[in-house]
Image (cartoon, rainbow, N blue to C red; front, side, top):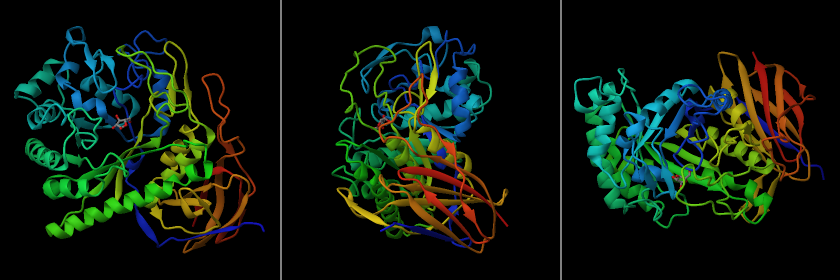
Length: 501
Ligand code: AHR
């Protein structure tokens, strides 16, 4: 029997205005993200400051509004003072999070310079592993205090007269994880995060703070960690973090493609905990969610080569993403949009080389992975007001759960353009699915664009020399005043832009 789907939406059924920070990303001093990734003095495309313009040219279209930095696990052992001042005096140190050598040739100021080149704002993490409240406050003073104090004058002496005005800060990273440098119990971390937050907000009351939630949903302390930490920090923080990476470990593609259903449940659980603690505290303000690490990640399960330890730019976690990975990235983005009432910040982890959509060869090319494309289009056209979509679609059962819809969808209305963007995924590996989009309180004028990633083998990949997987323009949608009919190709990611009146 032919499978069909109906997606209905009403212009008045609003989820939320999408916070543009949903399309954030992440650069950590990990692998070749920084060195030979964004920064490679001597590369033919590098500017005087060492940043590679070929990489910048690939980042800019993504329109990432924020970039998280400098870690990740790296931050829990980071001495930020190592990375400021004259480059020739900066110490070279062993870096215990990723077993590499850190040359400190890129630090806070260089990162701020880089952000200007890609038109993004910083989301800085402070070290709450080996360090504490005072160091976090010092870094904030260095970045945001105008002048006349020890650290602000130090910044000025380093050539940065104007404050960096960093408004978004993470209070450590994954502090519940045994792999973390100086991991903490929820009680220990909650107290430290609270005291650090107080000090930081006294120095700059305009900043926003993200407190660490669990490293991932399957952590044994998930749920309890969030409650303990929020009970201690609620008044002083603004967001709680979520991290998740999905893996197509055993090649069970339907189960892998269902992963965003887990992401959705994860978001709802953490949002529920925030509400519970708000009630307990009789608080007025809400704590929103910062999904500041999300991606597909195989942790070298595809290729078990262990790169040499204790070298600079140790080339770890250079994931090669395939077509199926791009489909899941597209679905995860729909999940973020559909939860944009609570998720205000999200960072694709990461941006260059390390589990990234953009890859580089040292001294060579920069190129695009499959996963670049759904992120590109969703970031470009998924800005505006997220609308609820009712999806009546066939479902499937798999190891990840039963009743998984074959179709994922998110809709964002851009009022300025009078344009509705729909992001639709067909997870059915074998069948195209005819789909009717039904609109209420909207009148459709024309299909502006239908772009799809479809027709590739699930394991198709791109390389530095061949962009096999890339989007194509589709035609064939049939439009009336309040509907569009189209056939969603099997295993496809689609973006449809419809002009409305
Ligand atoms: O993004 C890669 C790593 O994954 C980060 O350093 C850490 O926070 C997470 O476990």
